[in-house]
Amino acid sequence: MVYDRSCGEAEARPGMECSDRSRARPDPKKIRRPYGLDYSYRLLSSPAIGAAYRMGLMPVMDLLGQISENLVQLARLGLAGRSQDVQAYLRQIVRRVRKAEPALAQQLSELLAMAPSSLSPLRDFGSTIMPIDADSRLALVKNEYPVLVQNSPILEDALRVKIEQVVQERSHLAALEAQGLGPTRSLLFVGPPGVGKTMSARWLACLLKRPLITLDLATVMSSYLGKTGSNIRAVLEYAKSVESVLLLDEFDAIAKRRDDEGDVGELKRLVTVILQEVDDWPSTSLLIAATNHGELLDPAIWRRFDDVLEFPLPSSCQREVALRDLFGDDARHLGAWLPILSDFWGDRSFSDLRRSVQWVRRRATTKGTDVIEVLLDQIGGELRISSAETRKRAAKLLSEAGYSDRRISELVGISRDTIRKGRG
Ligand SMILES: Nc1ncnc2c1ncn2[C@@H]1O[C@H](COP(=O)(O)OP(=O)(O)OP(=O)(O)O)[C@@H](O)[C@H]1O
Ligand SMILES: [Mg+2]
Image 1 (cartoon, rainbow, N blue to C red):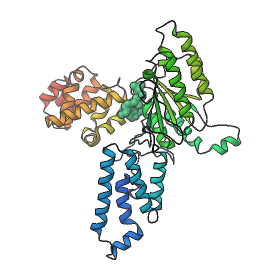
Image 2: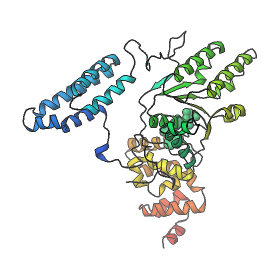
Image 3: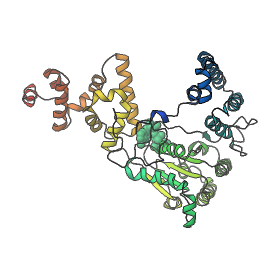
Image 4: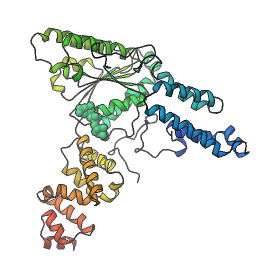
């Protein structure tokens, strides 16, 4: 079933695709399969190998055998965490397919170029060493590349436009330069938990094809401040030197730390350093700070960012779209229940909705019952005390689904007579 995820908002503009399976059905010829499968698929369809195999020079079983062997070997190395061996093996494949499959060889080479250097156990980009905590020797940041996003976040039009604008600016750098303008370099994401701040940062990194470097400030702030300061500086230096998206998560943690009088001076210095960095952030990289508690941040901090994006709780229509996504194939049977459910779960964030739907689906699977039955168990109590309008709507749906008048009356708290009359 193809449906609109946009709540009547603008469709994605060209160049905004980012592994988004559900927004539009992609052209099957353009689907990018995972490399292993892509490799086999492309090998079979490559003119040279295809011709060899049609002429009987390369029996198809040999070819499939070779592909399977490569896949199994890659899986073995990858699952054992032997990333250096994965790289060496991929380099061999690049050499082997360079002539017959230059595009594949190019893609693999690009990935290899971004992979960890052969000496460092941590992921490095170019010549920059990833920062680690001096005492624990643990990485201070989480690095993700490539960033793969299955579904784009469901966003109100204004937010979507702002995010797309950031992406488009990066492909119009010369034009901006000619106008004496630079691209957006820093964004502040503000909003309650579970509404898509982290998801949107990942989506941006995916669209920009950049690594996502995440620093959780709440974690880094737990150590004593002198060390926190040097750790944060190291991370900022690192992120500036790499073409990346840096996500400073739980940004309010720097404002929250007020536990020790002696810390205040040090904290102020730290905030000043971070704000200075926001001001001087290079246009090659993008800095995103995210917080649940915008009110804890000084207005002066808000002003330092090129733009502030406020993420609200989902609207009724967005909840419906999210529910349709989350119920997957079951959404077809739920049909008109979705708006009712969206009303019932009106105060929930996207991540709350995800949790609720997953529970319902798990319950229906383990009980071997229909999701509607589980939902009725869940919302039954609330249904009986909901508005007359909602109860009537629910009674009609239940009647269409073949429920007896007695059961409907129990579930929605309307007399059997009224149900019969409503049907007539
Ligand atoms: N706008 C959205 N569209 C679709 N799904 C969403 C959206 N926002 C959140 N979700 C779902 O909720 C999960 C958690 O969202 P996310 O991590 O982006 O929340 P957050 O705003 O960063 O919350 P927190 O403040 O707790 O970090 C996502 O992985 C996704 O499944
Ligand atoms: Mg988050």
